[in-house]
Image (cartoon, rainbow, N blue to C red):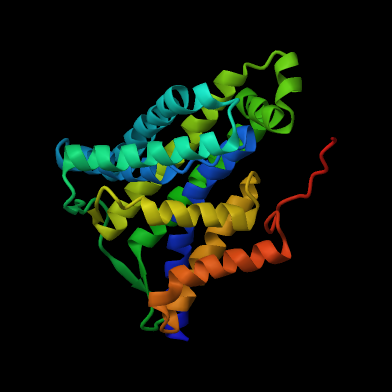
Length: 294
């Protein structure tokens, strides 16, 4: 039971990271039907920005988090303008190949500039542990930081989407881009805002992971990015609550598999769950079947 409690605590932290990254996938797909496979690498760059700010400028956790989100949001907008906007009306396969190319460019571009070795992230969060219900299971203060930051960012995202003009424009473009354009909405600006918000969330996840695990490397975004995409699909790609649900669902699944001695197979289990969910509900857990007129 103590081990189960401990793994559930770990699952909350891992699920929070997956949820933050998955939100970027699902927002971009909901707007322009593009799977941005470079999104995991923006998460990696966010971690390196946080590392540079805390190591060389000696900033604290929250200033580094905010600046990392700001810089990764700008990076997301640049990537959209340079790589995705010119092929927006091209075929799906062209967009997919472009996304993979951008991903590889970011990975090996960073490897060229920062070298491939693993870097040690500074200790910017308190290293304290609290016993849970007087058992051997412990709650690390870092877990609390991850959960609080994740919930705060998700609440801000909900406010932006449902209470601001930018959010209303994003929802309008997601439902019908042609009608939104006829109503005077600037499609290009709306898409740029979407990339900026999604990239900022990925940058925040990178700083959180660097602070929690204290190690980063140029290829750290590959597996988490792929799993966050799996989480978005499980929850229902294009549906924001689905990304959150899928992230926590995948985080709990992986930690429980590890708790019962299957840590070597947790990645296989994650993709097996994806296949199972898609066989039962092809649109994901919270996805909706939409009829298209021919």
